[in-house]
Image (tube, rainbow, N blue to C red):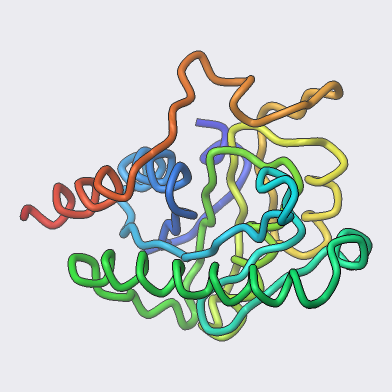
Length: 198
Protein backbone atom coordinates (compact mmCIF):
# COMPACT_ATOMS: atom_id res chain seq x y z
CA UNK A 1 0.00 0.00 0.00
CA UNK A 2 1.49 3.30 -1.11
CA UNK A 3 0.37 5.11 2.05
CA UNK A 4 2.51 2.83 4.22
CA UNK A 5 5.50 3.28 1.89
CA UNK A 6 5.29 7.09 1.72
CA UNK A 7 4.24 8.23 5.17
CA UNK A 8 5.18 7.37 8.73
CA UNK A 9 1.74 7.53 10.26
CA UNK A 10 2.90 6.94 13.82
CA UNK A 11 1.05 5.09 16.55
CA UNK A 12 -2.72 4.88 16.85
CA UNK A 13 -3.95 6.78 13.78
CA UNK A 14 -7.64 7.31 13.11
CA UNK A 15 -8.92 6.75 9.58
CA UNK A 16 -11.78 9.07 8.62
CA UNK A 17 -13.92 8.18 5.62
CA UNK A 18 -15.81 10.85 3.73
CA UNK A 19 -19.30 9.36 3.26
CA UNK A 20 -20.37 7.60 1.38
CA UNK A 21 -17.87 6.21 -1.15
CA UNK A 22 -14.89 7.25 0.94
CA UNK A 23 -16.02 5.05 3.83
CA UNK A 24 -15.62 1.93 1.67
CA UNK A 25 -12.02 2.88 0.82
CA UNK A 26 -11.35 4.05 4.40
CA UNK A 27 -12.45 0.67 5.75
CA UNK A 28 -9.74 -1.00 3.65
CA UNK A 29 -7.11 1.53 4.83
CA UNK A 30 -8.15 1.11 8.48
CA UNK A 31 -7.85 -2.67 8.24
CA UNK A 32 -4.42 -2.35 6.61
CA UNK A 33 -3.15 -0.23 9.52
CA UNK A 34 -5.24 -1.91 12.22
CA UNK A 35 -6.60 1.56 12.94
CA UNK A 36 -9.86 2.92 14.28
CA UNK A 37 -12.40 4.00 11.66
CA UNK A 38 -14.76 6.95 11.85
CA UNK A 39 -16.35 9.43 9.46
CA UNK A 40 -15.81 13.08 8.77
CA UNK A 41 -19.22 13.99 7.41
CA UNK A 42 -19.53 16.46 4.56
CA UNK A 43 -22.08 17.16 1.82
CA UNK A 44 -21.28 18.60 -1.58
CA UNK A 45 -23.08 21.80 -2.54
CA UNK A 46 -24.18 21.22 -6.12
CA UNK A 47 -25.18 23.98 -8.46
CA UNK A 48 -28.99 24.38 -8.68
CA UNK A 49 -28.68 23.92 -12.47
CA UNK A 50 -26.16 21.07 -12.39
CA UNK A 51 -26.08 19.12 -9.10
CA UNK A 52 -22.88 17.34 -10.20
CA UNK A 53 -21.01 20.66 -10.37
CA UNK A 54 -19.61 21.31 -6.89
CA UNK A 55 -19.93 24.93 -5.84
CA UNK A 56 -18.58 24.02 -2.41
CA UNK A 57 -19.33 21.73 0.51
CA UNK A 58 -20.57 21.84 4.10
CA UNK A 59 -19.13 19.79 6.92
CA UNK A 60 -19.59 18.91 10.56
CA UNK A 61 -19.55 21.73 13.09
CA UNK A 62 -20.66 24.44 10.64
CA UNK A 63 -17.56 23.96 8.45
CA UNK A 64 -18.07 25.22 4.92
CA UNK A 65 -15.92 25.77 1.85
CA UNK A 66 -17.26 27.73 -1.13
CA UNK A 67 -15.71 28.26 -4.58
CA UNK A 68 -16.15 32.04 -4.75
CA UNK A 69 -16.15 32.23 -8.57
CA UNK A 70 -18.82 29.56 -8.97
CA UNK A 71 -20.86 30.97 -6.08
CA UNK A 72 -21.09 34.34 -7.85
CA UNK A 73 -22.53 32.65 -10.92
CA UNK A 74 -25.05 30.66 -8.88
CA UNK A 75 -26.23 33.62 -6.80
CA UNK A 76 -26.37 34.04 -3.04
CA UNK A 77 -30.09 33.37 -2.54
CA UNK A 78 -30.04 30.12 -4.52
CA UNK A 79 -26.86 28.99 -2.77
CA UNK A 80 -28.36 29.77 0.67
CA UNK A 81 -31.24 27.37 -0.03
CA UNK A 82 -28.81 24.68 -1.16
CA UNK A 83 -26.67 25.15 1.97
CA UNK A 84 -29.70 24.83 4.25
CA UNK A 85 -30.89 21.65 2.51
CA UNK A 86 -27.45 20.03 2.52
CA UNK A 87 -26.85 20.87 6.20
CA UNK A 88 -30.15 19.15 7.06
CA UNK A 89 -29.17 16.08 5.02
CA UNK A 90 -25.71 16.06 6.62
CA UNK A 91 -27.20 16.14 10.13
CA UNK A 92 -29.57 13.27 9.30
CA UNK A 93 -26.85 11.05 7.82
CA UNK A 94 -24.43 11.80 10.65
CA UNK A 95 -27.06 11.01 13.31
CA UNK A 96 -27.69 7.70 11.54
CA UNK A 97 -23.99 6.80 11.70
CA UNK A 98 -23.56 8.03 15.29
CA UNK A 99 -26.22 5.58 16.48
CA UNK A 100 -23.69 2.87 15.59
CA UNK A 101 -20.30 4.59 15.68
CA UNK A 102 -19.62 7.07 18.49
CA UNK A 103 -17.38 10.01 17.62
CA UNK A 104 -13.70 9.25 18.24
CA UNK A 105 -11.63 11.87 20.08
CA UNK A 106 -9.04 13.11 17.57
CA UNK A 107 -7.17 15.55 19.82
CA UNK A 108 -3.43 15.09 19.26
CA UNK A 109 -3.84 12.06 16.99
CA UNK A 110 -2.83 11.48 13.39
CA UNK A 111 -5.87 11.46 11.12
CA UNK A 112 -6.00 9.90 7.67
CA UNK A 113 -8.82 11.44 5.66
CA UNK A 114 -9.94 9.06 2.91
CA UNK A 115 -12.23 9.54 -0.06
CA UNK A 116 -12.78 7.46 -3.19
CA UNK A 117 -11.12 10.18 -5.27
CA UNK A 118 -10.75 13.93 -5.71
CA UNK A 119 -12.14 15.99 -8.58
CA UNK A 120 -12.85 19.58 -7.46
CA UNK A 121 -11.69 19.02 -3.88
CA UNK A 122 -14.73 20.75 -2.36
CA UNK A 123 -15.67 17.93 0.01
CA UNK A 124 -12.07 17.36 1.08
CA UNK A 125 -11.60 21.08 1.81
CA UNK A 126 -14.76 21.11 3.96
CA UNK A 127 -13.54 17.97 5.75
CA UNK A 128 -10.16 19.56 6.49
CA UNK A 129 -11.91 22.67 7.84
CA UNK A 130 -14.21 20.54 10.01
CA UNK A 131 -11.18 18.74 11.43
CA UNK A 132 -9.56 21.96 12.67
CA UNK A 133 -11.91 22.01 15.68
CA UNK A 134 -10.92 18.44 16.62
CA UNK A 135 -7.24 19.47 16.93
CA UNK A 136 -5.57 16.40 15.38
CA UNK A 137 -1.77 16.26 15.38
CA UNK A 138 -1.68 15.64 11.61
CA UNK A 139 -4.12 15.59 8.71
CA UNK A 140 -3.08 13.13 6.01
CA UNK A 141 -5.24 12.98 2.89
CA UNK A 142 -5.23 9.59 1.15
CA UNK A 143 -7.12 9.00 -2.09
CA UNK A 144 -6.58 6.44 -4.87
CA UNK A 145 -7.06 8.92 -7.75
CA UNK A 146 -7.34 12.65 -8.20
CA UNK A 147 -7.09 15.64 -10.50
CA UNK A 148 -3.44 16.81 -10.44
CA UNK A 149 -4.25 20.53 -10.19
CA UNK A 150 -6.70 19.97 -7.32
CA UNK A 151 -4.23 17.73 -5.47
CA UNK A 152 -1.54 20.42 -5.80
CA UNK A 153 -3.92 22.91 -4.14
CA UNK A 154 -4.79 20.42 -1.38
CA UNK A 155 -1.08 19.90 -0.64
CA UNK A 156 -1.14 23.49 0.65
CA UNK A 157 -3.86 22.77 3.25
CA UNK A 158 -3.33 19.13 4.29
CA UNK A 159 -0.16 18.08 6.11
CA UNK A 160 0.43 15.24 3.63
CA UNK A 161 -1.35 14.16 0.43
CA UNK A 162 -0.96 10.60 -0.83
CA UNK A 163 -2.48 9.79 -4.22
CA UNK A 164 -0.97 7.12 -6.47
CA UNK A 165 -2.99 8.00 -9.61
CA UNK A 166 -2.77 11.60 -10.84
CA UNK A 167 -3.82 11.31 -14.49
CA UNK A 168 -3.15 14.49 -16.51
CA UNK A 169 -6.38 13.96 -18.47
CA UNK A 170 -8.54 13.49 -15.36
CA UNK A 171 -12.29 13.76 -16.04
CA UNK A 172 -14.21 12.05 -13.26
CA UNK A 173 -13.41 9.84 -10.27
CA UNK A 174 -15.69 7.03 -11.47
CA UNK A 175 -13.89 6.67 -14.80
CA UNK A 176 -10.82 5.31 -12.97
CA UNK A 177 -12.70 2.40 -11.36
CA UNK A 178 -13.66 -0.87 -13.05
CA UNK A 179 -16.91 -0.81 -11.05
CA UNK A 180 -18.09 2.50 -9.58
CA UNK A 181 -21.61 2.37 -8.19
CA UNK A 182 -23.23 4.72 -5.73
CA UNK A 183 -22.62 3.62 -2.14
CA UNK A 184 -25.80 3.67 -0.06
CA UNK A 185 -26.22 4.87 3.51
CA UNK A 186 -27.17 1.28 4.37
CA UNK A 187 -23.76 0.08 3.11
CA UNK A 188 -22.02 2.68 5.28
CA UNK A 189 -24.02 1.48 8.30
CA UNK A 190 -23.09 -2.14 7.52
CA UNK A 191 -19.37 -1.29 7.51
CA UNK A 192 -19.60 0.21 11.01
CA UNK A 193 -21.88 -2.56 12.27
CA UNK A 194 -19.41 -5.19 11.07
CA UNK A 195 -16.46 -3.38 12.65
CA UNK A 196 -18.32 -3.09 15.96
CA UNK A 197 -19.56 -6.69 15.83
CA UNK A 198 -23.23 -5.69 15.72
